[in-house]
Length: 557
Image (cartoon, rainbow, N blue to C red; front, top):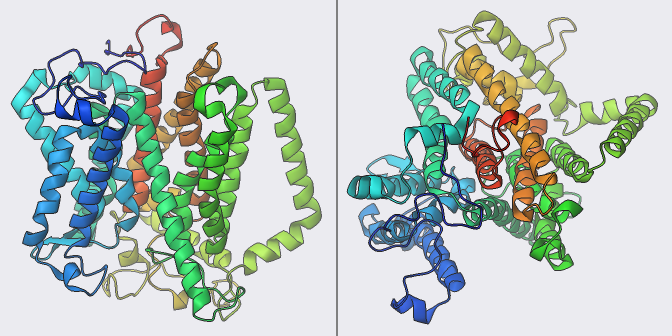
């Protein structure tokens, strides 16, 4: 199957067709000659104006009438009176749908502060943005059909997804089936919509509409900007703590709009490596703006707020995750395989020696970190959480227990109160009879390990599909990097894109070993955005799926 692909600096496939009335062809930045905007604004500033309009209109719609954000009259407006802001967003989306879709990551951190849209129905900013863009895109497609500039035949879409199609479909099917077997189907249905269906719908929508290097760069910068926004809020929260008399040693952990400081760290796993990759760009990608020290210093300056707030979260898992991302990025900059092997062996030896000589100190530090009043650290509690999850899996290994139904089977709690189910809550060690520390935290909403969480939530089929997605992700990532590094003049933006998503995925998986790094609404979107960005890099770099088709079109599967 062949897929229409053009060079990264060329208009998208289908751009030769007549553009829709009211907006240019996909990826086009300028208006038609003779139009008013052609004389008033350059294409660059027209794009910036449209981006500002999209962000501002959605921000105003989301804030107006959202009682979670304030107590003034603006935050208690009727949903009907806020609709003009949404209408402005949709009009701008009609004019430039690819831009609106690429900017969606900016809305991800605020999913807990949901806006009431009608009656008692509340949705996050990401969901509102996603479904608004979907409606606009469907209307355009219905009006123009095959003349729609973003139109893709099934064979083209299939070629863009490649071997990822089937594991994605199996994961979607397993997640949908988990609703049927869930004890609390209402909660499972909500989790399915927020954590599986919406992110995959975004993946599909973006595969249709995002086709140029500019779209890729805008998507990754929006993802990084989401983390930067939370970092700035974190610095404000830190300053507020200090202004109320807290000493530097007694400042609470920074959590900003989240309920947990670890959630801030989890978001930074996906966002900070995007900036770090810009700083650590390899020499093979030298050229243009990305090669200049100005670019690297700017990236460092923008990363500093995230690094400072990451430290203030005191999240050990996030620290280890971002350190792992840095090691991965540095390893990817070493083109000499022999040197890379030597450095890898040296790193392993140093780590081994450190564990050999300081294992007692390291063990004590980890086990006593963030200890509660009873002196029990969070890692100790995680060990018992993992044991509870394994017992649950042993009793239902194939189907699991349903999305977001962990609490129904884990403990007696106020979130999912069940008295007719067996609970896997371990409050005392069965051998030593010492307290585990979990009695005081009955509402821990997941087992703090992404593999166990997915297995408990969507069963064995869903877990295997998820693992297959990860395997194909890293297989494709290294394939793309090899393809780019072999080129005499590799596109530095594509190298940066590949390194960014690779580093972010490494960080997410590292912290995912001790936390939930996928099955939360913002993190689920982030996970599939990395998949999306990698598929776009493959498309733009013309990396074939198969080794034997180096001379064939990139869409050949």
